[in-house]
Image (tube, rainbow, N blue to C red; front, side, top):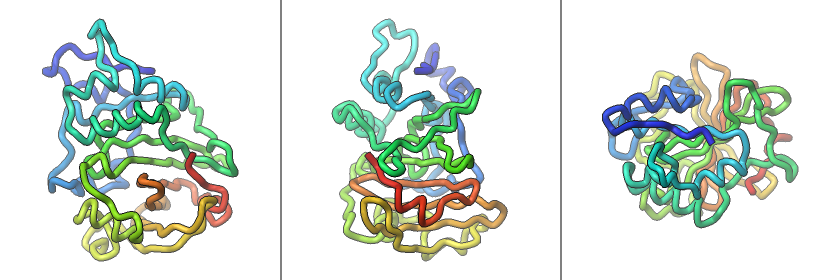
Length: 243
C-alpha cells in the first residue's frame, strides 16, 4: 500500500499531490453533493492507491502504531461518519465487491505509473468510492463502487435507478434536470440484463466527449461504470457481475 505521509493537519492540503490520484473532473458535476456544496478540500481529497485487490483489502485492516503516517483506519479520527461507516463495513466483511466478467475479475489496466485500484475517501455524492481501473478489449473502463448507506440513510432498492439516485442525492444529474447542465448531451434510463439479472440503468452522454457513464444499483451498492472507448455493449453486460 502506498501510505500517505503527513506531519500535522496544517499540511493536509498537500495530500492530493502525494496520493497520486486519478480523477476525471470533466465527467462529473462537482456541485452535486448532499449538503448542496462542493467537496471539502485537503484531507477530503485524499486517495489511497493499490496494485491488487488483496493489497486493498489488507489496507482496510491496518494501523500505523508509530503514527509516522496515516492509514485508512487512522483517518477515521479525522473524517466524518460516511467515511467511518464505509471503512468499518469493508473491514468487517473482509471484502469489497469487485467487477467480474464471465466469472473472472475484469483485467486491470496494469499501466506503468498508475494504480489499478484507487480508494477515494470522499468523491461523487460526498461518499467514499473505490475505483477499479480496468481494460476491456484493450480500452479503458473504470468501475466505481460505493455504499449509499454510508450516508446514514435508508434506501429502497425496489425502485428504479433514477428514483433511487434522487432519494439519495435529490439534486444529482438525473432524468428531470440534465438539460439544465451544459455538459450533458443526453441522460436516459434503460433496462439492461447483466449476468445476475435485469437492472435499470441511468446512461449519461456528454457534449464534448465520447465517454459514457452507466449508473445502477445492485445488492446495496451503487455502480458507476465509465466507458472511455465505446466497448461497453450488450455482450459486455451479459457477462458482467459483482462478487
